[in-house]
Length: 497
Figure (tube, rainbow, N blue to C red):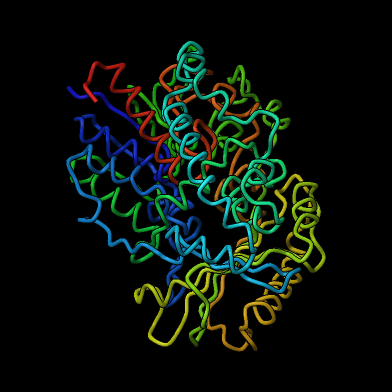
């Protein structure tokens, strides 16, 4: 009889584990509270317009390709990928200037020379040095963090210089590029981790490197199609996915997880349970009060968290001239970032990311119209900001920025459909602890051994996937967490991975 694996949440991490374990013959059953799979990597349909809820940059594509290959599949048989080059445009409000970012090295060098004369000389060094960092850190990040001897071994010792202890991402980029905004062109990726480039550990220089080295992709239908594809693969291998079926709590006896209790009162037993729900939410809501030993609600309240985001999904009855991805840096970018991480709401000057994928992908909006994705980094809910009171103000400011900085004149009258998600909504509707959408911060004392373990240390038979466990936030690393959990379970049951 095959071993029963229950997965709580059909987000990308849980689906990655589910794919691998179902293919290995485990009896996989996934319970998802939403009516569709994906979690924050799912989609929103507003009339004829379709939007990704969360991730829009598909990078490190090889991680998901490897997961599909391990199950005997080819990713391209399930999704249509388009490599974007240029990858995105960066607009500097204080300079009234923009730079186009290419994955083609010659084009990128020419563009740096055009916008920041002399900065192009650092690009080859960036590629060379950061490849070494990538080659040394990825084996550490893709290995589980359960055994201290496995974590602090020769592999980790070899990688220690690549952690750039004492240096932040902004500092590391100063080794290659001297102009402030040239550095920022290679450090804004810290926002993928919900961190400031002046606070993000220098080790994460591997993120802009992988972006430039391997490129950025779009998936037809949006990045949410990746989770649809993974769900399809799980079902093909006999796994079951129950949508609109929330889990109320984990079943625990003698510090051992033996199943889950559903919101409708049913209890489902399992040999192992994988939790793909938000980590803070899990510990505060799915774990019975007083049951945790290490990761108690009191400890969680003292952790550093990522920032949050204010989201606008706009269906416009017109097209735009915007590129696929555009990022506007606030005029006083450093102050804007400082405000976010000190819990303040910037009055008028803030950064904005806009995606117009409609010209790349005709499935997202009707002909002649646009599905516009607008993201504003803001403080998480520890800030105490009353989003019911300020939501309208932030919306108005964002629309004004779209009109003045992105050239979308009179945008208000072109909006046919609209949805806003505030940090309060992330917490209330999406079960995100304190609305911190990128989970626990990625400072060094909350990474690797110091992050919640993939085989969770507080209870037997419980495994974690997602941004709250090792290796951390970001779509590729979340896939990796799913792969790590699947490997650990296979090893425990003597199943060859």
